Image 1 (cartoon, helix red, strand yellow):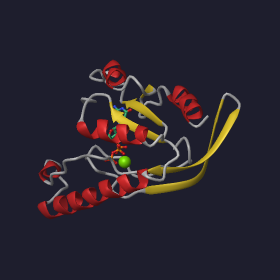
Image 2 (spheres, helix red, strand yellow):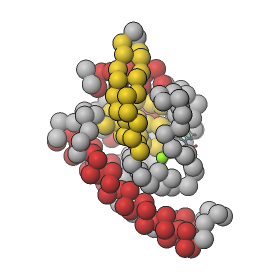
Image 3 (cartoon, helix red, strand yellow):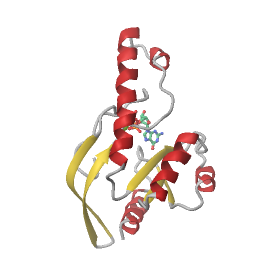
Image 4 (cartoon, protein in one colour):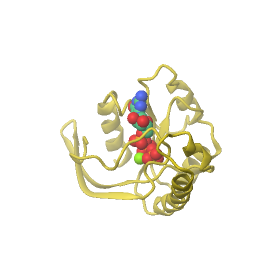
Length: 168
Ligand SMILES: Nc1nc2c(ncn2[C@@H]2O[C@H](COP(=O)(O)OP(=O)(O)OP(=O)(O)O)[C@@H](O)[C@H]2O)c(=O)[nH]1
Ligand SMILES: [Mg+2]
């Protein structure tokens, strides 16, 4: 909303809401008198395990719809990984209430670093009591990590500043 005046895509508490890569061109942000224009790519979340049964817990999901969602999510993960090849910089958004030391986080972030693609790690959901910002910074000491609440808009200024630093 902040960046493009509309939502990139729908938000949901059900995993794998974004299952297709979404692109917005010529996004402009400003911070401390500086201006940056870029294209933004929102990718499906990257994960190693997609189980259709996970979706069955949600009332609106039939077995058939759950299986479809799992299939789309799997394709989405593959597309995300392909898109990562063409990025100038990547913002990795982690849920700070969950364990940051997952194989997928370490693999993706390590891979980007190995290819000299600048990475900014966002520890999101810091408004929640369960959030552990310190644990995220400890997990990735060699990367910039910022705390953010996307929902409450907390930490957004710091986030912008880091984006400017990321792309010099
Ligand atoms: N408390 C809290 N909840 C958040 C925050 N940001 C997102 N959420 C919630 O987290 C859930 C997932 O949000 P999404 O925007 O769908 O997350 P996503 O990373 O795009 O997830 P997928 O599209 O499913 O890959 C929703 O229920 C959001 O309301 C935050 O800063 N704080
Ligand atoms: Mg999404």
